[in-house]
Length: 238
Image: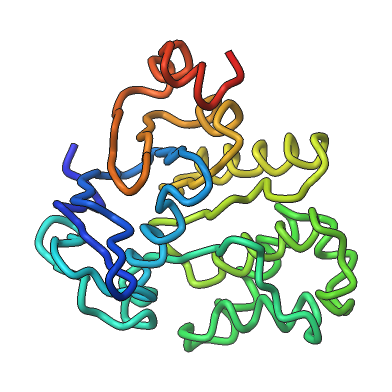
């Protein structure tokens, strides 16, 4: 199957410091691909670069094989079909749940489409429907994470970038969030998932990559990575 997203020898710098050292990976349509690694490995940098918030110094980010998106602006990348749910959720705290969702659909031109999508995600996240006129800053951490994911989906993406969706959440809420991610994938969404909870990520993913100090050190099916001795020792507590 042809890749939806392919990244070739990507290097990203912050001033004199190189954060990514020639990263190569791909995501095919319909997959959940997990990117695991320790804090500071460069996982968030990679997602920010895909979505246009960082600029690569070297390398290509290709969309649908023939479109190089590495120099596009973030809104142009969203328009192509890539949406990013960022680390730390970053909801608009003073706006309501409904207003946050409307902002996620800012590139949609038809009011009826936005309304239909909002009802679709209220059905997927019933707690958001109950709290639609509540300010986002007053939601629990798990509810804010659901809102961040729903807001990203409102742009009607083909590829959803999820950065640390379990961060700071209680284990029971984490389990619920990961079930939602699996459900979204099963209705057709392709997902690139950055996650420190390696076991949960690999349990729902089809394939995975290990990112270590800016370099991909392993690439395999999620099932293979779950039983890999190096991965177990470093990331799975085995």
